[in-house]
Image 1 (tube, rainbow, N blue to C red):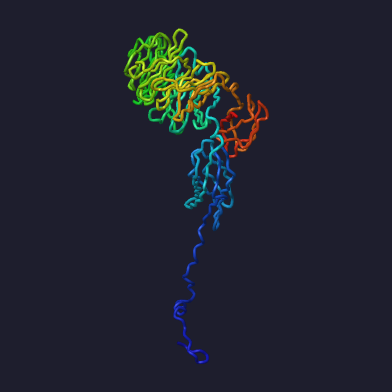
Image 2: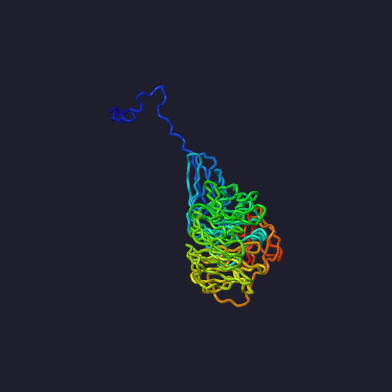
Amino acid sequence: MGRSRYGVPVAVPLAVALACCGCGGGGSSMQPPPPPSQDFTLTLSSNSLSIQQGSSSPAVNVSVTGQNGFAGTVQVTLSGLPAGVTTNPVSPISVTAGAGTSVIFGAAVNAATGNFMVSAQGTSGSLSHSANLALTVQKSILSSLPRTSYIRTDSTAELDAPLDEPHHRHLAYDPANKHVFAANRAMNRVEVFSSADGLRVAQISVPAASSADLSADGATVWVGTVLEEAVAVDTSSLQVKARYTIQGLEPLPNTQFDRPEELLTLSSGKLMMRLRQSNAAEALLAFWDPGANHLTNLTSAAPQLFQSGVGSMARTGDHTKVLVAANDASGQVALFDSNGNLIVGPQELGNGTIPFVAANTDGSRLAVALNSNGSSQLFLLDGSLQQAAAPASINVQGLTFSRDGKFLYASDSTTAAPVITILDGHDLHAIGQVPDAAIQGGRSEIEDVDETQLLFAITNRGVSFIDASSPGALSNSFPILANAPNTQPSEGPITGGTSVVLSGENFGSTAQLVFGTQQASSGSVTSSTQIQATSPPSVTSGATNIDAFFPSG
């Protein structure tokens, strides 16, 4: 206690007294607080977005705001995009503090539909922030178009199916990814199409590609060529994962078989190979182990069957057996297992040539087309190569079983109009017919089918998709596609939002133009030989395909 000037006691606070202790010339021991840490915020101009399949979205602005002096660059990564949705620019995106970048979302016509949450994750050094975008992908009008369609590939029949060679498999369907692979020998590539809408999704460079078949595990499409090479394509990445140099076989002096023209995949992991001569059409049947790259000549297993080389072949859906026909007029067939062993045969069906064969899932039913003395018959055999039904009088131009074996589909040229005849896969009785996708009067050579009864076939300079889900009785005449449209250019470099003019022929007013996998932002058919269009803004710079679709009205 102290006294004031007037004698009144004054209390001196202890805290103040203590704070003053030690005061003098030494300065204060207190440190100023550190400055606030630099940081940033990440924001999107919209937190929700809706887009249709095959279209582009309005721009979404991705912006970064610096805090406490932050002036760096942030890498923004977009995750959670559904299958078939891409962005322009492509993630990751660099955004400078105080600025923003416009991002356009584009959905392919076969993009996954539904509601999705897309996350934008921004990082700069140890700093990280995120923002979310609710994305809805809606069905496109393209999904309601007729399923029977045609895609031009500029293939040529002279190379795809030479007159002096037996039929071999060109197409392979991948049910897991809903893709159709087509060997295009004329263009030195394998075309990949979506079975959902017929759009081309990829082109894989394979020089002299001549056949395609899916492996038993679905991971690989094996491509045969008319060069000394067999090629393995990954079904997920759609990239070549291995190329094998085929040394060939020389069963006779100066007779070299070294062209793996057709490959059929087996459950053993091995393959049956149509191994052709380099300078002649004749081929032998070989058993190939790709692991050791070793070939075994199977001619001695059935020498009477192979007097003129190997003819048409077909494997069962479970990859355990292969039906093989003679390449002469002996009318013989035989059945081999997945290790290259002869199971049954040779069995003679009658004098005549066998242009097409097919096998169901387990080999309990086998179909054989036999041409003899100007007439054509379709035989249905059981697993012992005995007739399971009376032959049908059909001039077959292509043959395949449904995936469950219930139906047998035949490209039928018996009638004047091009049709597909559907028969019972167990006893060969007639079910009905559907129109063929006849291009300029041609007929489709069907080779495969999906689980919805959509047939896949090679046809006039392209691939046809034929809806066989509703067979019935057809009239003697019905509309056909007389003139196939053609656009130039059909592929090339393109940038989003670019105006293009396409020339060609046979354009209809209902044309729908697709760049890569997205519909054009705008377009009009100015004449039967010209289309003007603007590429979708979400298409990034680079090469792409340009496909024109002409829905039936």
